[in-house]
Length: 500
Ligand code: NAP
Ligand code: MG
Image (cartoon, rainbow, N blue to C red; front, top):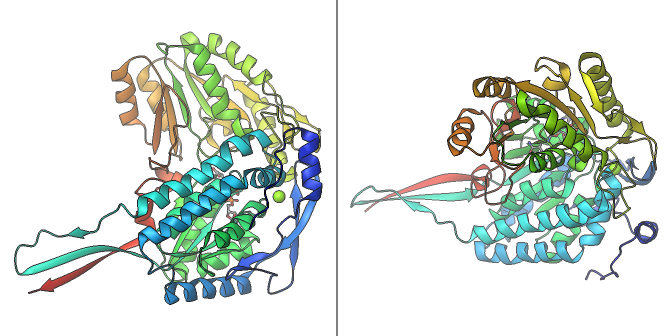
């Protein structure tokens, strides 16, 4: 059983906890921690400490073969796949409970691995992950199959079946949550899963696998392979015995998975990809104070490393200066700090390489637009800190308006009327999310209808819940995570037609 540890609150206490904590380092296959087949490990760097925190098994194609075989064996054996939805529900609810019981440890692994503020990890990421497991667990014994309206003499049953072996490849920005978004519906539906976390953030996924075993998930049903995208990720994408591939990450890598599938067994590939989400502020927005506060949250939360970040602020020219003034205050209040300090609201970016990349965009912005605030790289516990940055007078054809920066950088673009706002908003290859600020209900609906995105948040940002589907139009992806629709990805419909 898991040992309950005393609650922790100060930075010193968190740091002491790190020094005493056992960090997961083995892959997890068939219900047990295992070394990589090759015996190789990779250095897991923490942007929080600026150092290597541990060495983790470097899974490659041989490990993928072993994990897929374990997942297939568990599926065929049927303890999980053939158990009743109600029984699966009980186990997954236990897992949600164990995530909550181990919240501090999981939050610390998350913060250590990718630099997010411990308070956010503890108050947002971990409860959200538990909530996603709980929601899908509770849903699974409430979904009915169908009988088609054939008429007498025929009985056509339309039933949902699990696919078999689902592979999930996820990014580092919300490691535990992204794992939950894929694994919770896939497992609830009766599949076996092989999960590959990002190389930057392997720790919470490995701990999750242990907790799943503790909750009663049978051996082989949830396997976790830390390792690199080019090796382990690609091998999963190409594996002939993987029935479905669920990916969250960049558009570039998402496209690779489509070709891996085309070149192997034509497995379905579900993609949650990047974004360049517009935040449209009309002159009739009710409160510019609230717009400023939510806009700052929408772009600076999680260091801006959010796929649906509102990274383009489209604002009516008549209220731009007023809004910018307030936004600068918000940005100043979000100065980066040590992730383990409980008061920190903006932590470290995930890695030195990623920080370099974000700073290249900042340099590009300096050349093409007007820097209003920020734009600095700071050295605190490491050199992975960037101050909240706002560029004004951006035009939508500039690099900082077109490419996903995945950092705390906001591009402000002015518009003069509604049609222009919608045109600029849709002038992007992405289509993940958008926000609309207006006190005119007709305008809110009219604009929402025209935006080619998966989620429109009206008078807020990033509206999100396990109850509602999340995913993208255009090059932001295909398929939807969360909600009852997420089960569509991990099940196949079977028709059984009986003549009598
Ligand atoms: P990424 O580079 O695309 O990596 C995502 C995952 O793919 C990682 O596990 C990565 O492994 C793996 N990978 C990398 N190259 C691969 C290859 N050639 N073949 C197979 N797998 C490969 O994305 P990231 O930098 O981790 O995350 C940031 C991106 O994720 C952003 O574009 C963001 O918008 C997107 N994102 C989208 C959503 C959404 O729901 N739409 C949510 C969160 C993030 P390694 O890291 O080990 O190389
Ligand atoms: Mg790391």
